[in-house]
Image (tube, rainbow, N blue to C red):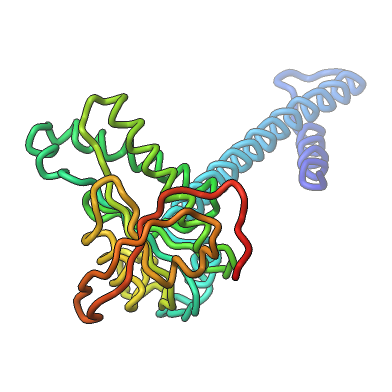
Length: 281
């Protein structure tokens, strides 16, 4: 505002000092100088306004790009972890004593891949994984990554939640429904196999390039084994997860299976959620 006023006054002074092409009576010289100064001031004002508009547009574009970058970063890792990484870009490793991890895998994906073009295969994966992503968002869970046709999710971090096992169980049941829906819509024989285990993990970000939020520990390995040793179209869970479900879900005992590095482990198939919660006895 003050800059525009100064420009106007300066232009008015210049206009008063400017001389007309021909000699004019004193009164007309004053009128000429006044109008000349006002016109110059108007032009300078337009230049100032144009410059201000250009600055505003540039700032808006910069803010838009910043928001896009923030959104992309928050899609890669939890917002709280992304903020920590921006403030102090070093190794992040947090211990979480109780989380529930899920692995899901598309059964027979190799055969499906052999019968599809690369474009249609990627489109199919995107279709089913996008539905899984929507379920993860609805249940406020944390997607960790996809590896080929495998999908990994965790509940209970970065913020702890007491219902982490129940939330993952609900997700697993909805994932079976989503996979069946995509199979019917596409005409492809799509079935998934799901494995779940609960326990402690270490979560964080390591490395210097292509940052990714990931999990480490026996809990992750056992959850992966629950999936790989499971049955098509079924959800296999460990005894630790079954205990945390506290009778709120219907389970079918499977018996024991051999888990590499752990020996025999009791497992269960998750059937569905009970309409009424049984008391813990």
